[in-house]
Image (cartoon, rainbow, N blue to C red; front, side):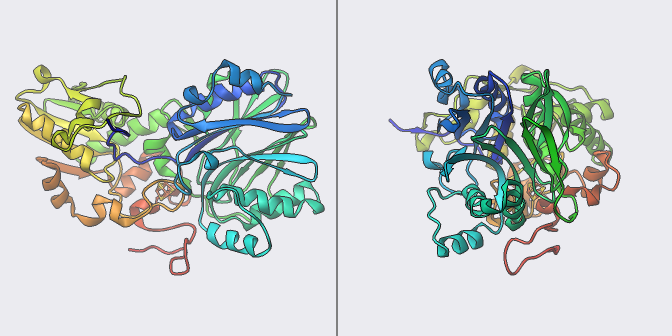
Length: 473
Ligand code: SF4
């Protein structure tokens, strides 16, 4: 009997982070915070708390609910400050030692860090630090920040933070916990990944990747951190530092399209409403006659609602998700190859047979899952299958923390739109245009606000010697 992960070619986010200062239920609230951020990483989860002026932590492989129970949380009962993390590995192996928060002891104090993003200069910094004598415990780039930070502590806490961050290049939002109970939030100067600040009664402050985590712990959303901002939360209140020169803002637009939870507000935009706006724009750009509009749930749900509203074609749920498919199950044999995909979604035959349908998807990365689903629809007698995608084709890899880091993984980089339509077995296929995607966000000057490198190859931060801030097209 083989136990394996279900087949799924959906892109995956790197991590979700949470931090809370000065709350007697810090560990339990952090548990709920990372529970709300579970969609950002399902491989491992961890919580670190301040206890007896040291940092205690627990982390493990699996979902938040697998890693923590009442006994574990009771063990973590601490002194008012905590940070937490959920992880999907885009750098480093998927093993317990790479789970976060990562905690070190240095000169009688403890520090813990939880990180979301990807450092493009990690290999250079690690080599430099190892040549200076640093010994690394993990294979993640998140540990690098702590090595840089403690080396500068002789110059003071704030100086050490500013210096460490100045050496990092790429995408990073992180939270740092000190054994004095300070909680620090840091966002990179381009602002790739979301990180927001919230407040609870009695001036207790919270940091979280997305506002949905603030909602769950009943914290009031105050604001997103600015790109390049360091926020230090201590018993003296909230101190904000802006020590770096302004870079072009590059918020990851794919967070709005796919990664973030629809009930979150990130980068100043509600995710649900933005996805509906993309669906409406798609209906204007690529109309087609059909009996119904449907998503492959749950990814295309919100754009499909927008498409249906704009086109006047009824919205329906032609495929039903099995909500009880866990992360692992007994892997089907080779002769049952499409089984894993079918296990998740099943078409409603009586609704779809003989109909012309429009499927709305939020992206096609590797294309294998979409092909299997379209085949299933054909087999039950759907007459015409049209597909509309609520973003442009992914032709370029992401180097900022999303798990499609090579061009070879991207089917749109290898096939024309017509070849892809044929490969997927569709009657028609259209993507949202790049100008349409940007305009539908409602952001003024979106070109200067979003990273869209996976669509146009314009990388805001160079990732090796041969590619700097240039467009590849
Ligand atoms: S390349 Fe794409 S997925 Fe990666 S940060 Fe930029 S917009 Fe997001």
